Image (cartoon, rainbow, N blue to C red):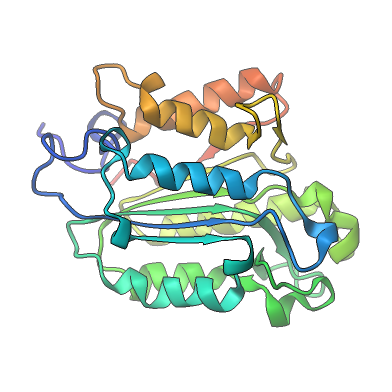
Length: 272
């Protein structure tokens, strides 16, 4: 079988060493969002911004995929408003061609609407906790843009949005456990709508993402091992493939957290 970008685990794309092995797939595009500072400080995280910044730095290097700077939308803290993220999803995602690779990464809070738990949101920098439905970004917007705006057939969606424990009592009636379960359920539904989409989330339902200075001076444990894997720790033959990368992240995060956090791979990531 010939190797193609993102199919089965054995034939998955390399994010690393972007040029020579897959010369026909030269264009790589990315939307990277990281929010540590919120307008409402009770929602603040510690290292989500740093996770996103380091990922952006890595993917621009030859070993990280050689993404061109003008092919990356980076939205950190105050830049990561609902309007800016929506604009990126609606406009920027129209640019990639069908053969291109698209990476979408979120490190921020995610939560359901307290009044409509079936509607799930990314909590952007300018989200008002008492008005999630009016100020946050509905995850259905991601679903809609992937289906209607994006021609690229190969998409990698990585979400570290299971920080609900920090805000569960402040933004609604539902517990942190229920928040994470709803967010992950919806992300899996998004993954099922687009063949060729590889989905990796930072934790299972009922778990929260851990972050701390013990991971390279300040990272979420999930993104710390994502970066390590992309730099080559996940490589088995000198090339880091998606299946190998996801397996590496899952194994390392589980070990580092004494099995308190288990990254989750979308069920439809590599079977088409």
